[in-house]
Length: 227
Image (cartoon, rainbow, N blue to C red):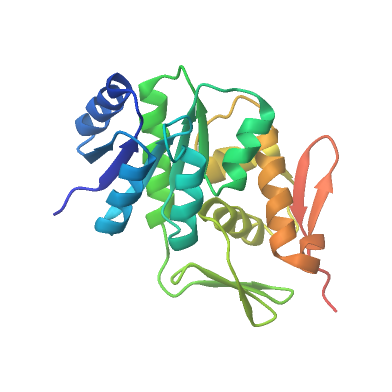
C-alpha cells in the first residue's frame, strides 16, 4: 500500500528536516519545498499529495498566496506555520483557506497529532450518506453541499463543521465540544478558531446561515424550524 504523501514548504532547511523526521517516523512520505514557487510546482506535478504544511513567511510567493492557489484547485487539507501570533495574521491564514494554523515555536509531536487528525477526518466518509435540513443537502461521499439545489464551495474545515452541526441538529454545542469533535484536539479554550469558521460558514450558506444560532457564553446550535 502506498504511503500517504505530505508536502512541507519552508525556507528554513532545519525546520523542514525537523518536521520531516517526525512525519517519517509516522510512516508518511514527505516532500520538501524550499519556497512558495517550488511548493506550487510540486502541487501541479503531483496530484497524490494528501496534505500541505506551509510556512507563511517565504521568499517570493509567500505561504498565504500558495494556500490560496492550492485552495482554488483542491480541497486538500492545509496547515499554516508562522512565527507571527497576532489575531489578524491567524485570520488571514483562515481567509486563505487554511484548515489549521500553528504558531512557531511549536511541539513537533503536536504538529504530527494535528496532521493525523486532519487526515483521519478527510478520509472518514461513510458510503452514500447524506444529511438534509432546511434546503441544505450535504453529501459525505462526494464531499459536496447544495443549498436549495445550488452547489456551494466549502473548505475542508467548513464542510466538517457543517457536518457536525447537521449531525447534532437542535443540540446546544459548546465551543470546547466543537473543537474536540471537529478539530480532534484541545485548542486550549481559544474560541477565535470556532467563531472565525462559523462566521465564514454563515456567509457561504447565505440566508441558511440563520440556522446556526449563537448561544451567548457557550457556543452554537444548528436549528431548523419545521414548517
